[in-house]
Length: 339
View 1 (spheres, rainbow, N blue to C red):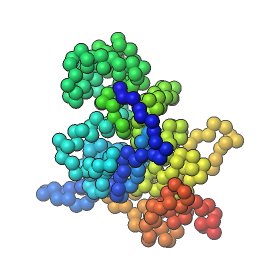
View 2 (cartoon, rainbow, N blue to C red):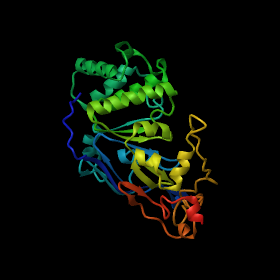
View 3 (tube, one colour):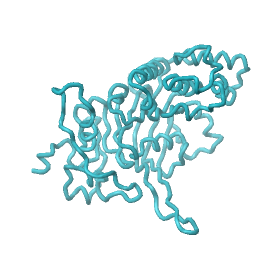
View 4 (cartoon, one colour):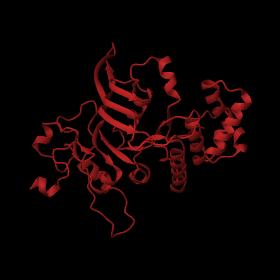
């Protein structure tokens, strides 16, 4: 494992996305011609700094996971630019991309599905070193045992199969595999959503410890806003493939500017009756991403929508210091907008 150099006072940019788009073609007819596109990710731009955790939240189908898979190259980029460590990687050939495999990893939602049920855990982790290093067999085994210890497992787990572990233990194995090659960037795609609350806390604590120890940067994809509030430094809110709000976690939770963010936050359970807040209910379902609404993509469900919202698409701009939102009435109250 590497040691961490002293961090500079000004945060360094590790990952930068500029106008990233991911469309899935819709084919039909006898000739299977393209008849349209599912616009899963639409013009997403962001910066991720070294050593920080950026949460990505939104309803199911908003494009969170597709964004993560596109960054890693698991989905082919439709348009835009992805810059990692100051180098554009979207047009690199497969051989050129190999060196980024060690730097960019992913922790999946279902750890059991990402493991070979017929392969012992020790062999699964050994395979990572065998494919990407020139380490001899005994040295690889020692490295695997160190990895197991790093994530809170024991040497005796080396020869066990995936079905012999609990859900939390399997996710620890997924984390071990992700950090095996000393990456600087890890995408956590709903990494704790399938776990019990007590196990979630343990896994999140492990991720925090590893981040502090190795200066890791996380893109933390989740639908659980309570977890995001605890774990992340900044939050990006997505709706129908678009970014609608982004700021640090305190501003997002204490002073949201976008009505969609307010609706998401209003659905968080409160521990006491005194802390209860008014629930903002969104009417209808999310529009079809192959035929998004004109103007603001959220206007069909927005309680603050006015005529301008269906005509003019709001720009994703900085309304307050380091607080960005795409809304014509950002930060305004419902009563003020409706008069």
